[in-house]
Length: 156
Image (tube, helix red, strand yellow):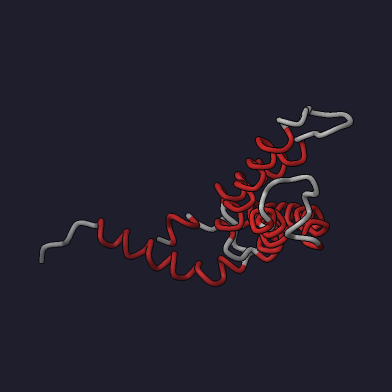
């Protein structure tokens, strides 16, 4: 199960790049979700969506951003961010005149967060994360056991 959720944790220079990318993306998401978190059930003033549905967006942005920063449960955080950004693009930005750049309801920031979350989901958080500290040894042990099971038995 861990192998499916995390894959292998990247090390070296790629891990340092992932750490920087996670920190910047997570911090941007925290600042993006913070105003919504101040009024989580009513942040969309002219919406017909119930409050508990509105609350999912600041939860995904603020909680997902914090999870990316510390690298904890990264696959779940990325899935929450991906879902949130897809909903934002297709239910808010595009139907209300969402254009690529310029004034008005642009969707470029939501698309940027979506792509960032997909990239982190596919690469994993790297070794400089709490996920690697908590799950890395168990994942390495599981991979070693799997490799051992594939070896042909030596007949003595």
